[in-house]
Image (cartoon, rainbow, N blue to C red; front, side):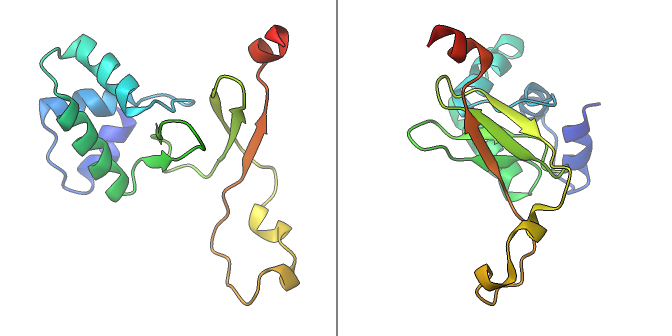
Length: 139
């Protein structure tokens, strides 16, 4: 059983065959698929799967907090199944490739007290941007 399916079961979420295929499609340490990519890959295993089922299932997984929805300027939303691991993202500005990265220190501590404007910081999300090796080679 996949890690994501196990986490979804903890919410007493009914695991239908369609939901299982979608969750299993999202498995992986650097998976950041668009909804269309999830649909395409899931349909390889279950051709009768509908677009609406994929979108509804992804929205439910996000609402449960088990999948992170990432919005990037000018690009389709991406879905990250690694919501149970603290991490940040490295994004290629050329092709949109995304990788999970792990900070060696707590980024909440990086924000000086006078820049917190009275907020109690509970978490931070860092996005690093650059060019992947393939896009560097093409430039």
